[in-house]
Length: 143
Image 1 (cartoon, one colour):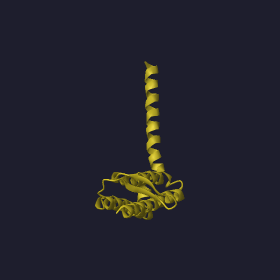
Image 2: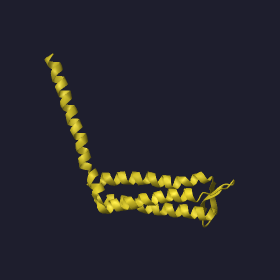
Image 3: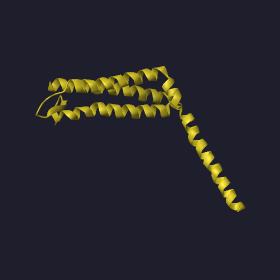
Image 4: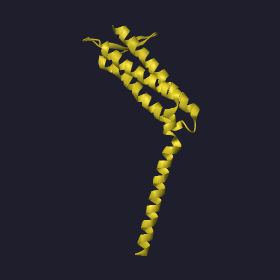
């Protein structure tokens, strides 16, 4: 009986140590300070606005066509990708996925590698700009 109580106490202590380890990891990763940094929040806010504008731009400039539209144009080879209009929405979707991926990685690296965090956050903005230009040119080529 005494041995079972000792085993239970050991398991409870290990569970408490594991719980403290998990929650201390969240504090070490520094999630809150990442969002309190003004430069980072400005860049993330602008990136979200650009992604939202991209979605609205594509919904507003809908191309009504029975034929496939040009999805990719290469200067050297010309048109190399055709498809339905709905495939254009993969661009802002990819932008949103990359936004969350880079923001999550930026949060993770903020305390230990602040430069990597800034680079990842700035990449979000650059990616959104490039995708917005891609959406604009696809609409212009097909319109």
